[in-house]
Amino acid sequence: MSEETGTDYEVGQDNITTNIGPFGLDIHNPVFLISGLAIFVFVIGTLMVPEQATDVFKAMRGWVTVNFDWFFLLSGNIFVLFCLLLIVTPLGKIRLGGADARPDYGYLGWFAMLFAAGMGIGLMFFGVSEPISHFGSSISESAGTPESWAPLAGAPGDAAAAAKLGMAATIYHWGLHPWAMYAVVGLALAFFTYNKGMPLSLRSAFYPLMGEAVWGWFGHLVDVVAVLATLFGLATSLGFGASQANAGLNFLFGVTDSDGTKIILIVSITAVALVSVMRGLDGGVKRASEINMVLAFLLLLFVLFVGPTADIIMGFFSGLGAYITNLPALSNPFGRTDANFSQGWTSFYWAWWISWSPFVGMFIARVSRGRTVREFIFCVLLVPSLVCVLWMAVFGGTALQQIVQDGYTGAQEAATELRLFAMLSELPLTQITSAIGIILVVVFFVTSSDSGSLVIDTITAGGKTDGPMPQRVFWCVFEGLVAIALLLGGGLAALQAMAVTMGFPFAAVLLLMCISIWLGLRAESKGT
Image 1 (tube, rainbow, N blue to C red):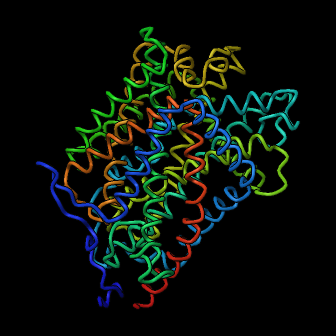
Image 2 (image 1 turned 90 degrees about the vertical axis):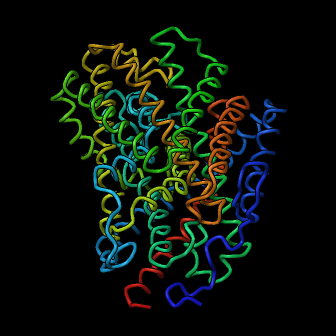
C-alpha cells in the first residue's frame, strides 16, 4: 500500500488492452462499455422514434425543473460558499502537485483555455439574447404575475430598472455560481490526481469518503454518470452553436435555416475538431483557445468603442451593482413567486452547468498543476466571472441601449439565435463583425468538442491521459452523433431536456465532492 495515497490501486489496472484491426485500444472495464452502449442505444432510439422522443424529453425536463428547482438553487449556493471558504482558510496555501510543483502554463494561456472550455458557445448565443429577454419580461405590464417570465417581480413600465434587473439576472446565470461548479470538480480532480497520485477520474475524488470502494461499482457508476452528463452537456452546446452559426450564415449569405444545414455544420465542425483532437492538448486545444481569445477580444473592443462606449462602461458597474443587490433574492431557493424564471431559466442553467462540470472541471485540472488552492479558486471563480460580466455589459448593454435610447427593436424581435447579428447590424462593418461572430461560434464549437473528447477518453481509459488516438476519435464522432440525434428528436428543447436530466443526479455527486475535498485538504495540511 502506498503511504502517499493509502491505496494499492494503480492507474489502468482494470483496463482492457487490445487491438481491433490496426487500431489499439486501452479502455477501462466496464466504464467504456456501459457508457458507449448506453449512448448508442439512446442515439438509435431517438432517431427511430423522434416524435415520441420529443414528448419524453419535454416531460423529463418539466418534471426535474418544476419539482427540484429548489435543489438546484440551494446546491449552487453551497458551491459558491464552499469555494469562498477555501480562499480564506489556511487550506488555500496547499499547492496542487506538492510544495515544489510549478505551473505548466502561463496566466495568458491558462485563462484562454479556462474561458474557451467553460463558456465559449454559450456567451456567443446568450450574450445579446438573455439581457434583452429579461428586460422585455421585466418591463412588461404583466411582470410579477404567475404567467410572467420576469426575474423577481420585474419592473413594469420602468425601462431603467428593467434594464438593471435584466443585467443582474444575466450576470447571476453567468457569474460566480457556474464557475463555482467548475471549480469544485476541477479542484477535486487536480488535488487527488497530482497530490495523491490517483487516476485522473471522477471516482478518485471520493476516496476520503468511500475508501477502496471507489475502485468498484460505486466508482464505475460515478464515472459512467460523468461521461453521460458530459456528453449531453456538450451536445446541448453544440446544438446551440450549430443553430447560431446557421442563423449567421442565413443572415449574411442567405443559407437555408434548416435541420439539414445544422447537421451539415455539426458534421463539418466535428471533422475540424477531429484534427484538433489528433494534435493533442498543446498543439490543438491550446492553440484554438488562444485564437478564440484574440478574436473574442477584438470583437469585444470593436463593440465597446463603436457602440455607446460611455453607457457600456457605466452599465458594467451598474450591472455589477444590481447583481450584488439582487443576488440574495435571485439565489433564494424557497418561496419563489417567479416560477417561470427560477424553473425555466435558473434551474435549466444550473443543470446545464453541472452537466458540463465533469468536462470543464477535468479540463481545468489538466492545465492547473502547480497552482495553490487559493490561486486556483480565485482565478477559476472570480476572474472568469468578471470577464463574463464585461462580455454581457458590452454585448447585452449595447442591445439594451439600442432598444431604450434608439428605439431599435430588431434584436429584441429576432429569433434567439439571430439576436447577436441583429445587434451588430446597427453598427459599422456589419458584414465583417458578423463573419467574425460566426468564426467565433465555429472555433468555440471546435474547442468544446476536442477538449470534451479528451476528457471523456480520459474517464473511459481509467484515468490515463495518453490513451490510443482511435479512442479520442471515437468520442469526438459520438459527440456529433448525439447532437444530431437530439436535434432530429426535438431540436433545442430536446438538447436542453437531456442536459437538465443528466445534471440532476450529478448535482448530488458535486455536493458529496465538496465534503471529500475538505477531508482531503485537511489531511494534507496535517501531513497525513
